[in-house]
Length: 400
Length: 82
Image 1 (cartoon, rainbow over the protein chains, first blue to last red):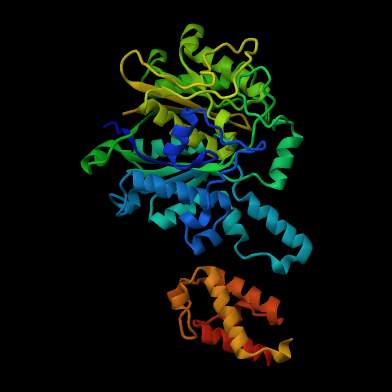
Image 2: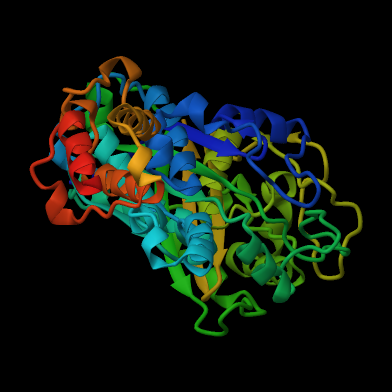
C-alpha cells in the first residue's frame, strides 16, 4: 500500500516577519526583508514566543525553530498535542551550522576568562541537532528525531527524510524543516573572505549584476502527516509532498558543477519519484542565490531537466531576492513559500531583476507577482536547494 | 568580601538566579524544591558558577548531591564560607 504524505501545517520566521503567510503575502507584494545588506529576522522577539527558560536554554537557531514550530502546529490543528501515537511522531530539522552564536560567544569567554567560566549549557545549545531535540521534547514527539546537515540544502534534506519516514511507514507524523541564525561576526567574515557574500548588499538572482548572496536568518517548519490518518482526524490538507530526490555534484567543495548536471538529475529524479512529467510543473522555486556561479549552473540544470522549450515556459523565481539566503533554513522556508504560492496560484517575483545575463534566459518573474496557470488544473511546483559540499535536493510539491 | 556576606544576601542572590533560570517568582521560597521549580542539573551547575563568582566559594558536583531546596543550597554556601 502506498502511503501519501500531506502537509497540514506551516510556520516560518523570516526577514519578512513572523509567520508563513506573512512571508508569502509580503514577498508576493514585492516587499524585501533585507536591510543594510542583511536579512535579519528583526520582527522576531524571542520572549514574545518562548518562556524565559526556553530562551535561556536555546541558541537563536533553536529559538527560531521553536517559534516556527508553534505556528505550524497551530496551523495543523495540533492544539491537543500529537493527533495519534507519540511513538510514531518524528522530528527532523536541518541546519547549516547550528548554534554558532553560542560557539563564538563561549570561545570569547574561554579566551578572556578561562575554562572555568564556560557555560555548562554551551554544548547543548550549540549542537546542530539542538533544534530537533528541543522541538521533539517540547511537543512529545517520541519517534525518530535528528538533524540533517548539508549546508544550504539541510532544510530540504530534512523534509525529504521526513517524507520518506512517513512513506516507508516509520512514522505517521513528522515535524520537519530547517533553522539558521548565523549572522555572527565569524560566519559573516568567513563567507565574505570566500567572496560568497554580495558586496553591494543587494540580492538580485539571475540579474547580470549579481555579486553574491545576502546572509539571512530564520526558520521554516512543516507538519507532514500520512494522508489517511490526517483525513480521518478531519485535518485541513494544505498540499502534498509528491516527490523528493537528492544527488551530489562530486565536483568541488563550494562551487556548483557548471553544467548543472547533478542538480538536473535531482530535478528529474524528484519528478520521477512523484510520478509526474515536466508538463505537470507549473512553477519552479529556484535556489537562486544571486551568486554568479549558482544562478548560471541552476539555469542550465532547469533547462536540462525540463527541456529547453518547457523550461522557458515555466515561471522561475527566487525567494532569496526578498529575504536573502537563510542557509540551512532556506530549503524549508522556500518549500513553504512554494506551497503557499501554488495554493494561491501565484508566482511571486524575483526582486531586483533588471538586467538579463547572457544565457540566463528563463522566465524569472521580474519584480511583480503573476498569476499561475497549469495545464491540467493541478498546482504542482518544484523547490530547489543546493549546498556547499555539492549537495542537491529537489522537492516536488502539490498544493490542494 | 566573604567575611561580610550575610545569609540574606546569599538567599536573595539565589532567588534572583532562579528567576533568571525561568522559575516562576511566586514559586520561589527558601523551602521550594528545585525540581518543583523546573530547575535541573544544568541550572545547578550555572548556580554553582554564580556562587563562585560572587562569593569565591567552589561548589563541586558531589557538594551539590542531595541539595534539593534553596535553604539547603544556602546552608551549603554558608558552611563553605566557614
